[in-house]
Image (cartoon, rainbow, N blue to C red):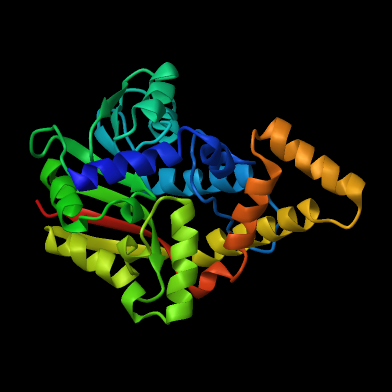
Length: 293
């Protein structure tokens, strides 16, 4: 019950209230991923990087007509609906604990795409029904990763595939210094998370292998995810705090009227996220696994 309440509270962070606007600021709320660029030196906007990550994940998911796919933690349904529109004949079921995000997802549901209010750790589906299960940035939101892995494995058919894009810590939270733990706590609090819930790459792989899946490949996207995001945040913060009052006013107006966020709140968010380079603490991986036939 406590975990369920925490999951719902966390989900609201991304769907309602002022902080939801900050999370979405400058990006594509349909996808809500951290974004990726294959060339960290290339300047690209948040929506461009989010689309690049989606394209990469679409290649890993490799949906085909006639397949049944599960989008675990679908959020606003961007990935589910994209697959539904680009792969006619595929059936996609998106699940999420947040009714607000599901309502937005359902409002633009593509043919063959369905949305269900459910937790990924307690799926309302029979065993072996899905050809592919995938999730994008779900792992850090789920405390009981053993149960999550067990459920995703249970509903996957023998020979089926799992594709998981996730944030990982460079080292276990408990092994970090007191100062680093404090920083991780400050960042995680913005997203209603607990940094101790964020896995390392090794612990995530071990969890899903123990659940009965075989690792096919793991791809490290850390530099292409965190470096450009950090650079963008630094640039936004400099603009909001620019010595020229006209530039500051324009930046504040963009934040308030285009993105719907209060400049002071946005500035606080950016400062916390730029106090240290994220690659000191975080990694980003895409893990592909299969369930043995």
